[in-house]
Length: 384
Image (cartoon, rainbow, N blue to C red; front, side, top):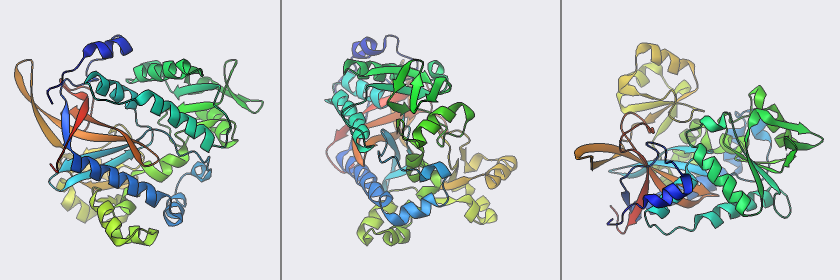
């Protein structure tokens, strides 16, 4: 990995580069581990397409997940830790931020990736799969408090990309959208497609009512959407995806079920476990809210108090085996540092588009670590 970071590529695209967004250190992964992560992702998509899995998940999902808009959803993030037993999936995100930023970072490190055409093609495919013809005329990139979002620069990148391709694009507050006359509007601009960056995964907030109504009436193509989150990203789903017997029941052969279950950190639904047994095992576990995001309300078992334990027992939590992340030793400003590393696979329809890493210190990933942030991944031949 003798290549160097070309900061001018980042400055030209972003202007001022936010602190701690990008790490100055690249990381590597073996081609064997990269291939195994791709295989796990492909098998997950295969399971999610089965009627048995869908029936089991949707029977307990929010009502809005029952609406099928037909488009699968863009930019899923599959996060892995890599240990002695190989890659282990720790979670799936259906509104995974950072794809454009990481593609840009890879380009700045000299990694060959023609990402812009692929991203545009993906949004075009979403449009067609949702039953539309031609191409969208106007796209809104939607979130709450957009300009305060840490990854706001990525919203700007996508807006500019859409506009260069001839599509009108706006960055819009969800509360500013209006559903009237059978269309979703942002001011006087009718919106055809929404690139959804909200973390209200079921669109339950009152400020999201117009978007919710337009989506359920088929008046706008929303991507990603509530059904995608219910089928993929609710962390309780991992308890099924890591169970080889359930996987065979859903239709995988035994070999595929063994590969998939072995590639996911063992996950259990707290409400279905004996609390005393879990408490005894807690030091080997991570506890995560079923619908959480950005590592909020995530607890490492060896650090929880009795008060937090009561909160976990009363909420929709999962208990996941602790899979230590890879650690990277580096020199920053003349001083040695150790950074933890997780690997995010950005994927569409079960195919990996981009492999990136996040470097950090502390319990979970964050963008507050000196020397941390998104990092490029160089794939090296071999099996580790």
